[in-house]
Image: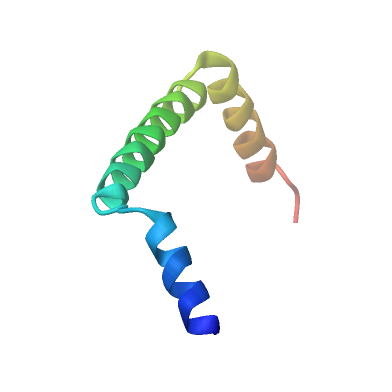
Length: 63
């Protein structure tokens, strides 16, 4: 009884071969886009000066 039901469901699902390749491609494109935006943000002047200020304050802490 359940076997026929699951066999019917498998038939409705369709063929999804090749789907993982396109998912990896889209994931790679999104990761590269995010990395390039993050690189632009980190190398901008405002973030660079903020990071430099944090490091400078950390080095100036008296022990």
